Every structure is written in C-alpha cells, then in structure tokens.
Length: 156
Image (cartoon, rainbow, N blue to C red):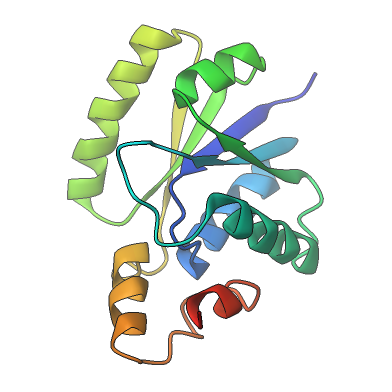
C-alpha cells in the first residue's frame, strides 16, 4: 500500500489555511484522512458532523479525490496505528506552532512509535479558526477565510 497520512484537527471551523495544508498533503500522499477530533472536555462552536459534511463538500469541489473525512473520539496516534497510517500532517504558521507540534509529536511517538510527523508551512500566518470565529462574532465578512461550503455554518 502507498503512503497514507492523517491530518487531524479540531477544525472549528475549517479554514482556507486548513484547505491549503490538505492540498499540499494530497499532492504528496496517496491518501489523506482529514480527522476531526472530538474532545468531551472542549466545547465546539460548530457540530463535528456538520463540519465533516462541509469539508467533504469542499474536498469534492476542489477535486481532492484522494482525501476522506473522519470524525474520531480518541487519540489521533491510536487512530493512525489502528488504521496502518504512518504519517501525521501538521501545518505551521510560526515558531510557536513548531514548538507546540514538536511536543505533540514526541507524545505521539510514545503512543505510536511508527507515526512520523510531517510539517507544511502555512501560506497565511494570521489565519486561524479562532480569528475566523472572532471576526464572525462581530459580524465581519469572513468569506475570504473559509471555503464556501463552511459559510452557511457561520451564518447560523
């Protein structure tokens, strides 16, 4: 089997920055699983199933046919191990992200020694889900920051 990767995240909401990372990963890996993490201790602004539908719609629109969306309640390193996935994709905006991701990668290696972290640089270092949520809460137009399939979720 070819090289398979997961791109995990909370994706609350999924942004054009996330989409950019998925595109980069899809160019390199045979298959990419966009894994929406669900954490009982962390409240979501948008339901995971609705985000998953919107991401799937976005992937179809972008013709990213080697990508799939999964909702997972558990450790991402375990998902990778259980599904024979050897690579975890992470996006980096700056050195703060890098330091955070290196700590996460070390923990993931303890859980799944076969899992390799692969970093892609973000094209827009200011773009984040938090920024989109905040601008949206003040009634600002966020259409340039998220895929069109995500917009209806933000308008609720």
